[in-house]
Image (cartoon, rainbow, N blue to C red; front, side, top):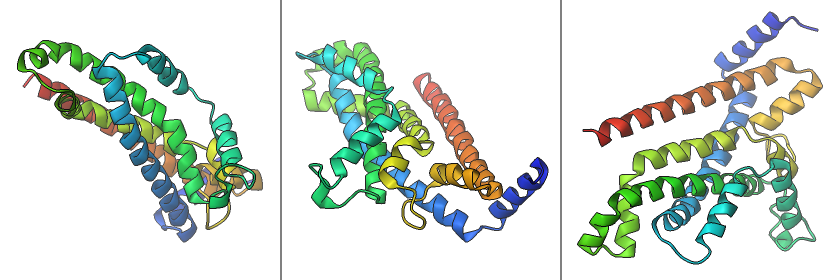
Length: 235
């Protein structure tokens, strides 16, 4: 077995050589993850804003459900999406199983509750601060939600980045519905698992280095955006 340092050197060699297989896997991972995060934000932002800005029957139950779904086990989500997309499932005729679309669906199911729950908390706090102004100005429901979402834009970007961090590191759900097919559905996390089991440690570690770099970058962006939001609030 190769030493740790030789494997590490080989991994960095693959990264800096822009290995074609590595680039293909990273590219697919980013396409799947970014698409899932965008869809999750399109669903989660309005849903969280409505739950945070208004009181209606079932609001407490909706809040409990959103908070509970934040901790969805990925393998359970993968199994449910698999059953939905399998040949005998309700979406079987669409033939989406073992495609990048199936992986996007699984990641969207995982990330949307996180985006919606965090958005609800952000909007609810902001709504309490502005509620008297909205009432005195006679602001309608649509304008209220629009104003709250705009004023919370920095925090919502942080929410979106948190969703991205959750999606890009996912392996359990995407390997069930994607199948880890070479040149079709192989992404960073599933490739790391496969190549490690095959003993191809250089490629697995190279992808791990890229994944860690992405994670550090996302966290740096989150901290920067939070600092910008604080400065904007006190400007």
